[in-house]
Amino acid sequence: MDGNGRWAKKRSLNRIRGHRAGTESVRDIVRASREFGIQVLTLYAFSTENWKRPAREVSALFELLKDFLRSELEEMMENGIHLNAIGDIERFPGDVLEVLRHAMDATKANQRMTLNLALSYGARDELARAARLLAQKCVNGKMCVEDITPEAISAHLYTVNLPDPDLLIRTGGEARLSNFLLWQLSYAEIFFTSVMWPDFRKEIFLQAILDFQQRERRFGRIGAQLIESPR
Ligand code: IPE
Ligand code: MG
Image (tube, protein in one colour):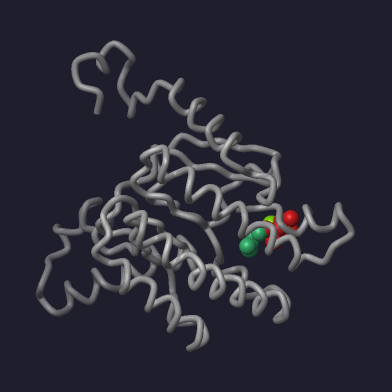
């Protein structure tokens, strides 16, 4: 969700106003995802690198997150949305964690859609954590080194139980991954747009999905093989 700061700057507003406008896009995109029948929507809300931003901006982002979680809980319940978080959430202040845990707990039985928030998330941290977990199991004799397969690695990431993303959308005109789901995005289709996140709404989201539907996903094979078995 990139481009909040630049969206604000262009309007001579402060960056926080851009983040606030961005939460309106979050609402819109969550609703649209539900409507389109998307099973998992992951939003990169706060990266491990974002901790380096000015303290005022970081705490404003926390306040916006708390407000969002509180104001959306009812709608999440009505719409069968399960809230999940990936990342080193323990780094968050207690009050933020409390609101987050409450929302995750309240929605845990909901099954229609998963809204997955990447919070204090970094893919390199996630992979290093998986390596530590696997190494510890080997040391404890619960696993042997031969068992460290791609499936075992996937099972030790924050995204365990979640499918790999089919489509990655990056707004704000940058064409990079910025330490996001590096392992899980191996076969994702990527959609880059110069639209700033506060302007990213249902119409352009639909455009990204229509674009995705035109792609031929071969997963390393040739086109003719896909008719027999699509995966
Ligand atoms: C939002 O956009 C990303 C978050 C960390 C919430 P930015 O804050 O990165 O906006 P730009 O890149 O400065 O425009
Ligand atoms: Mg940015």
